Length: 429
Image 1 (spheres, rainbow, N blue to C red):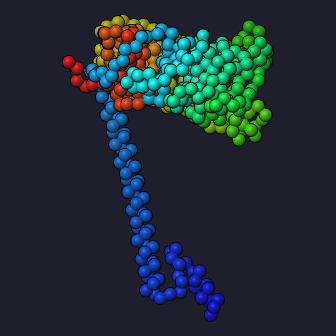
Image 2: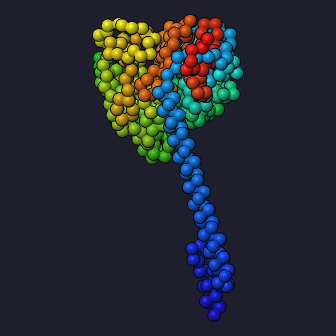
Image 3: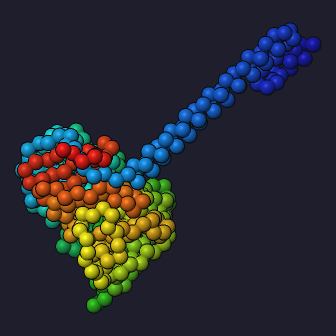
């Protein structure tokens, strides 16, 4: 009898413990459990419904915004500044990073300088990932890491710097060159060395470009090797996670060689995707752990610019035969006789759109949602469906334009001022 009571005590039915009590108590337990189960199911359905509605609304907003064109703008803020021809600008955490041989500055959406860090660099280069930026003196020895609050670390390298990149965690990689060897060294955001790869110039050649994945676990390099009179490009992939550790001592997990073809630019366009920009094609590699060629996107040799975002790569080419008509700021003009053609592809090699334009452009600024062409006093903002959102000719030369985190807001640098503008449907009086 005692044994049966113990068995009865541990018996479960629909996750309700039967303690051997009355039938009424057991029924109440089942009713409580059923109400909880129904309540949990309703809560899950409600959360899913809210997420679904948010996704739909977000998609509708993006669709409408991408198809909407603007005729004018209003100035949100304006600050008197003096343009420095030695300065470069990058979008940084929704604001602006300015760097020059004299220093590095972080500028907010109002055009105000949040902080300035003095540097002494002859030829500064910079890269950004997430909330971190790295600035290095190409050909020199200085490198520094910044976040939105200012300088995180500043280091002096033992050899001259060839290239640099940074991950979203602030870990950065520096390529150094001595008389007989190259060193690819990775550091934590506070300057602690994590690893170092040494290659000889005699056997491996000269570094052309290097790119680091967002998580800081993977590295992809392009090296130029001269074998007699025939140049060769070697692409090499490294993995510093568990896969690379199990592969071999130097963490190399793949490589590709190209003869008589230059590949001056390689880039982790996403954490698991690498784009190699050659002189006649773009090669897309999938690299979740090890690299594998995914697709090749061929193009003509008269490529003028390359650009990329988190889910696309693009080129600008010059049309071979052109008859000029109309004006460069005509938003309805998109004909085959335009001077330039922009082409944008997804990572599977499919063309997303092409866009013809005549602007004598000087720079291309690519973001995740749009591509900005700028030249002289004119700008053209092109959405990811291939439509022009905003074409405008300002009264003064545009030295730089950066999209901000604010909707339809941009920071524009002129010779004598920095303005934050917001696009407008109506003509401003």
